[in-house]
Image 1: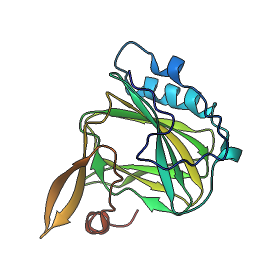
Image 2: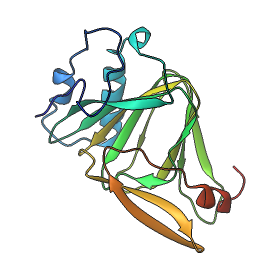
Image 3: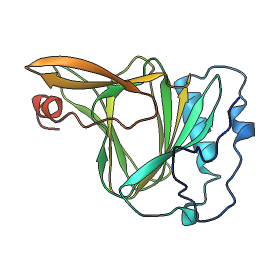
Length: 187
């Protein structure tokens, strides 16, 4: 199991040298269902000292842990952030909102858009086989737990009127999907 509180590729965002441990949360011994991911996200969020977060730049994401069964990320968005429509390559996710607001929208075709908004203290889960987008308001702080760990992310956009999926690395942010977003009509 790899436990990383501050991976070398991600800049330190805590002002304090004391970073909480997540080893006991990470050690589940099994793959998780979406609801278990949401509960782990809630438990990890309880250990985060938001007063110690460096609130500068557009925001970022920090790996809290990664092992064979799950991984967790602390996401901070000091500027508004739309992930665009994406999948998690077969990993389910649970999200807990610590601060601010975030919206989750499943990709739907031929019906009304399904956008759910979440605020501080809210948790939700998303299936491993779904396509969705997250829209974070400026100031949103969330914890995301994925199971199994994400191997790749599929990004969706319209190209010449056709829906296209572009594979991307697991540890990079997803780009917005403006043409797909517009094609779906008003929210």
